[in-house]
Image (cartoon, rainbow, N blue to C red):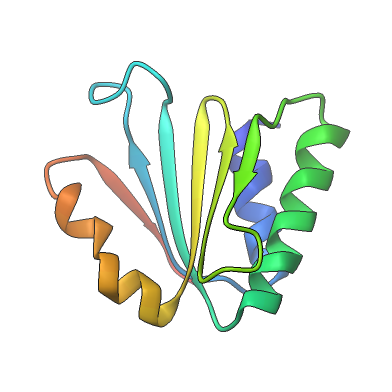
Length: 110
């Protein structure tokens, strides 16, 4: 299974919402996809981190780092896929969607 799909399934398990998948192949030499999502709490973000780590390792992909554990914005670097998990307030504050307005995006309805 593709890394992107594994991550999306892990996010689905914790009921992450407002999931967007940006195609960054033409924008970044470092990664292919950027996934943004919202969670209701830092506890829900922690569960998402655990599910993502578990699925990535179980399927022989590599996880480079996790930044912002126990904070309102967690960034998970899985090499070709970057995942940003936000609380709703933090996502509204940073509004990354405005930065990526010219990037192809898929909205995952959750």
